[in-house]
Image (tube, rainbow, N blue to C red):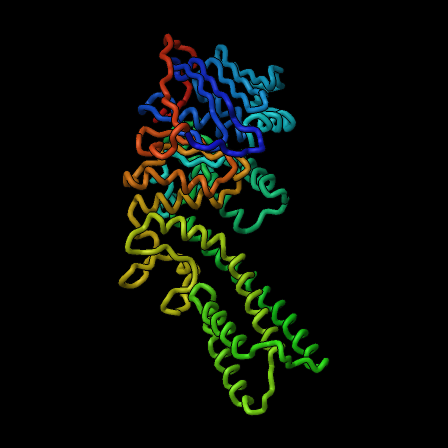
Length: 468
């Protein structure tokens, strides 16, 4: 059995639904960490995820578009949220206390919204089953003003702005945020048109969103690295000047040849294509200076030690700044064969013409090419891992619908392990009809088989959408 996951925050422990789509009822117990719900198509798995996602947004209005009699969620602390629908009228209860929810305004108070999230958790990271559609939305030629003309556009846009502010505890909205918010609103409205009005807020990235996001991340990292280099240069200059002023340039305790060898190794490492242009010329100049003064028996050990320490600090600082990018590269490259996913300077040493050219595929043989040329399964891997690792809402649970889509069976077995690494310490709920997805997660797989209940014509006009 898989080890228990340590999760300090409350998690969703129980979910029950009665009269779903006027024909299904079920109860399900959930655990911290990984949960894999296995079942046939069309029995409510997607709706289960949408219920959790919409409640994590405190978007009670969505439930106007779903046929049900009763929904209840309890967390690991025993707190609960319950929704009841009678003759089309919604009632909302928090810890068995009726809220101020009004069926005309379809809204809870801000305090009540926070109480809902104290039960369900913060906003979820949701990976929908219609990912392949979203991956290509940015590449399609639809008119974004079609969405802006819809009456719900402003309401959703305002809610998304507030979501971003709360996620970062920052009232400012940056240029990059503005583009993301606009994209999320358009995707959500379009998907509700295609897949039904109960679809929650959609923040899943297209492949071009990934390219744009990583390009921005790489550019920001270079700015941080430049600042680190500048500070280290200033510190090294002061230390060298101090050594000269104090007359402690040389010392018998420092092995000058050994220091030069260590500096050579550090400079060679610094010459990697990920970290910028070559600096080996600086090392060669040091060697020439040392050789010219070899006959004078002058030892410059203290000065060389300052330079060596500066190179070590720079190496550590750059690795720290670039580690999120490197970790993402490594996660993607587990799935690729005969090629590597790369972010940063190309091995040819050429400066990219466009910002997006910093994200590319490098084959084992041949020229680099863009990530849009990846196969459908490879694109799924890139966007899924990016969504889970770069989500603004990692404080909430992670919901994944059909992680197996477009993936080779070998990838289906390992994809959740890599998503779990990106979302450590959080609850993950994945719904699947592939036995391969849960094959390596013994003890975390549940067979989902709702009961069929007597049909009821109540709420028959609800827009439930396709693919329950």
